[in-house]
Length: 392
Ligand SMILES: *Cc1c(COP(=O)(O)O)cnc(C)c1O
Image 1 (cartoon, helix red, strand yellow):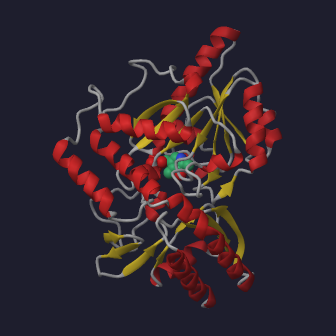
Image 2: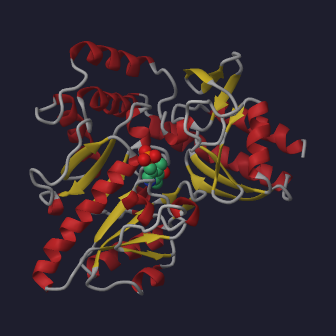
Image 3: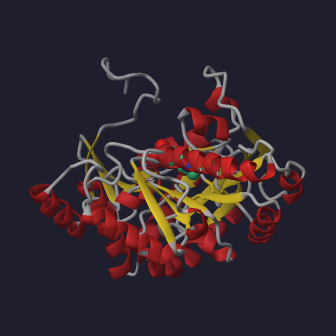
């Protein structure tokens, strides 16, 4: 397909028009059915058109869609309560996307740094992020994302970012001084190609941040909300971050983002210091509430844990079968990256066979099934991949 004549050309021309979704399947304008292992880039965690989600949204549509944060919003308060139950004592700030969550986190880090520098008398505003990370497309997030393909054409960048190498604790240590306000990393680098942070590295990083009195901020926008089989991907390592960014899966397809700030720092934002018109509006908050209750009621974390071991084994069998095509398989639960020889061609052939997957990084394909995907859905993906790879 070509670019639509009245739409900006910032995205690649689309391969088809998506018109309907049902569970794990997406349908194009010709009625062709696709097993959707893109989940709208890790967004439709509960699959498409989940009946309970629709019901909750429908009810709220009739009650109240929007009122701004001038007024108290019960569904927003309830969603915050639920996230605090999972993340720990603290406060939530709602917004509309991953980039907005990270912008809020950058402002949060600056507020912390300002407070710290009042004590030390030295400037403190810098944030360390990892090479190959992705934090979003706004100016703050671009500066946090040290990738030429993201920053090209938009210099000068926002000041105050330094970069180190994921899983190389010494590279973070080397940058530490009193000017560092925070470290911000993804538990599993998503757009960069599914590169997980090691457990051991995360634990050392937590210690390092404590020693230097800087915040540990985790961007869980892609890997969070159940995708790994834990609610947050970092839970496996046992670390306790000072703040967490989330979005993508949180609304199940309705735009909502959030940051959680731990109790020790949850008064840094005071009236007037940050805000958004739409963030956490009644309808958006209901979308988040519905997603969390469906994850709980349908035991979707257990579903991911239970099914992913076998799925990963089957993927590794494919790697043994096609060693010249598949170089590496990474990831956890329902967030998997496969290093292949020709990612764009594999994505195209998969689509022709009715399987949707997403390219990432350099010659990597991402598999992001919705959390509702059953063992059979996962086997279907293996069969389709086998068919595709056999044809190479
Ligand atoms: C997608 C993503 C973002 C940006 O989210 P948007 O909703 O696209 O602004 C930020 N961080 C990570 C880890 C992401 O995967």
